Image 1 (cartoon, rainbow, N blue to C red):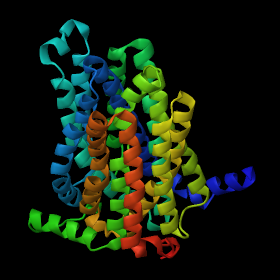
Image 2 (cartoon, rainbow, N blue to C red):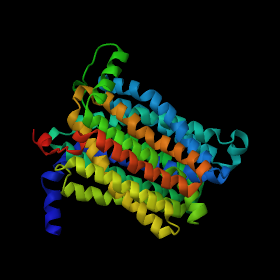
Image 3 (cartoon, one colour):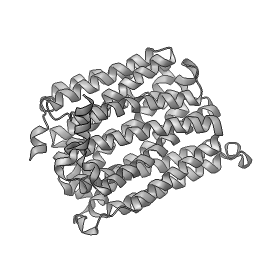
Image 4 (cartoon, rainbow, N blue to C red):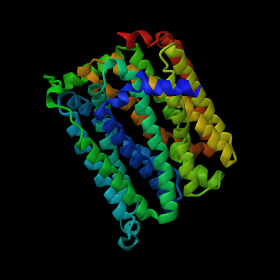
Length: 422
């Protein structure tokens, strides 16, 4: 078995890792994701300590999603006609600016909370929402420029594995640094991580001649991208399925309340819980790298979403730390299946000239659902109670998965093997 895995990772399935700019892309995304995840877990704990309000945690998602959704479609248009590397560089500066605000806000001598209340926190996440609305289509479109078509499935797997490794490192490092060195050191680490990610993308070399020029009215171009997604059953089905799973099945936004009130752990325990889904996703990434989901892809996709919903229900009913951690770990295993398949579908079934716009629609479907899911979780927990709200979310994921599977049979029967061989 070990010999077979070694052969898989040293041969064709790891050929994409021999591309220098793809390696820089992975490193950039690692530090970017690590900083973003650190910021999420640290701010969540910090805000809950300041306010004691579950609704305040959910409001972070709403404040972030409004600018993200508002700018995403326009960002997709410009990603298709401008230099993607420069767009990513300039947008990373926004994230550095936001992390600097949080660092200054956390300095006790400046009395940030007494003077400004929680406004600097929400303002930072408003900036983060703008940045995410731009970065998500830019990342996706640039990946298509870095990797040949025959390697796109493996690029999606390595990209997902890289993201989830960072998603483990970020919450774990954030919780540990906050717990042992304090809030100032934690926010400073976030700023430095964004700085490293900026330097990495700055060193990438994507010639201007690769930029596809698209003329015409901006609103006409945006409508073209939207129409393409809604006219393609595979793209629409994959985006919708993942959107509802994250929207109703996400419990991450209210994890600080679970950690403190039900599982009775501190910021270190919260960091570990935040890392558990990513740990499961990393394990699944290595499995998928050895055995890509190219046969019976649609069936595998629906199994992944169903497993995710069941794990969220199991987590909500857990009363002890280790059992909750196991369910979160398993949720990451199942969730990563749909992530890899969705990324591969987007790359394979979208023309190069439209990847920015299609990815921007995807960011509204899927990316914004993380923040809306956080808001939904906070509101539901406020009126239904903490545990019932998460059980309800997991059950809704299963119901909506069944409806989508019934209405989109072509997605259920999808197999990607033929597409990758063309």
